[in-house]
View 1 (tube, rainbow, N blue to C red):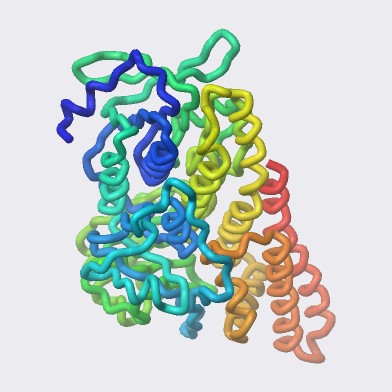
View 2: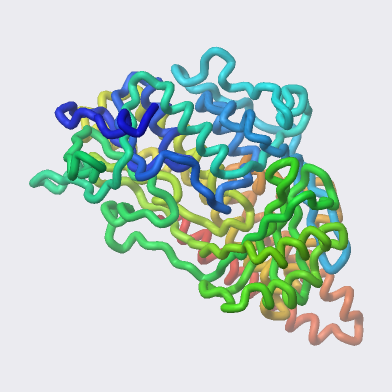
Amino acid sequence: MTVDNLTTADEKIVYDAIVIGAGVIGPCVATGLARKGKKVLIIEKEWSMPDRIVGELMQPGGVRALRSLGMVQAINNIDAYPATGYTVFYNGEHVDIPYPYKADLKPIEKISGLVKGGNDKVLNDSTIKIKDFEDDERERGVAFVHGKFLMNLRNIVAQEPNVTRVQGTCIEVLKDNKNEVVGTKVDIEGRGKIDFHAHLTFVCDGIFSRFRKELSPTHVPTVNSSFVGLALYHANMPVQNHGHVILGTNHMPIIAYQISPEETRVLCAYNSAKVPKDLKSWLAKDVQPYMPKSLGPSFDKALESGKYRAMPNSYLPAKSNDVIGLCVIGDALNMRHPLTGGGMTVGLHDVAQMIKKIGDLDFADRPTVLDELLDFHYEKKNYDVVINVLSIALYSLFAADNQYLRALQKGCFQYFQRGGDCVNTPVQFLAGVLPSPFKLTKVFFSVALYSILINFQEKGISGLPMALFEAIMIWVTAVKVFTPFLFKELSS
């Protein structure tokens, strides 16, 4: 479709839905609703391929959501790299954590009207194999170049006859005299500012959303840390098809995962919203010495290239969609720390649940749609809470900046080393396939107790008084790390 076709949307139509934004979430919302028979207008400022370092690792829960939506083939033909689990490094030691067995999980739900013609199954291509994703006994995640994945999603939505695409800048959410949302104002090159109307407007404009404030002016994210990203080429990964989490008592967490046969993404955590001015010196001094040896040569080349970018890590608990005519979804609504790679998983799961909830309703019946969206907020909560709280709690442990957090960090690693359920249950949380806040709480405080036990063993009999004091402080630290975010998520 040419750019000209992207400027000719009919403003005289009252659409069932307007979707603002064609990132990862927008095309999935538009495609799902269109397959449910809805007339959809989707607005995007620029439909050409973006160049970003976010949204490159999808956990198995996200892949499962794509299957439910009938859109999993978006990972095909983009040199996407399969992920089979994680390897966690800690002060030179490491432990492998494979993804869960399919037999331990609930079957994937196929959404009526969306899944058809085998579109819930991957295709064979140069990197994605049917035998791996469909026939293997374990779940798989996938990593990819973000822009290529995004273009596949946009190509899928472009094939839907019920979808009209617009290239333009959404500058305003339109409201009537009852303060209910009725559409959007879009600035289209060559046409000017055009009003489009719909029964329901979806805000899917991502991390830096301009329109989440329409839900509430106080619904704003906090930013307390950053990631600095580098692209490594032809890197010698320590464990093939694994994400790598590199931890230590003397450095911030480092994440590495392969996103194509040639390229590996490295994300280096920095415990401030403002990164150092001299990034190269910081990377050379505080990151490079702690990289696994096999990654050293490719990391050094990336460092010399000078091509690295910083991005803020934002946190935003979800809020219920309580404005008639409006639905905010994806990162526009809810963000968590990117350490665990759960962003797309939460967003895609929410899309699947939302379409199941309201996809068959008449959007002209706006009060009924609002009631169902309010129910949807609570029905999806358990799933989202687990991934969101896990991301914050793990970052606090992995970026330990005091002795009690460092004790929890060591305890967490040695807990994983025990294997069995000490690995199998945590990886289900990480993979986005175990939506149980209660079980997450149980496991987190099991790690805290194990950390206390390790500390007692290391102190010995002579150090018992100090170990008792430190036990209290480790437990208090665990409570401070975990419970405020659990409460925020459950009460939001």
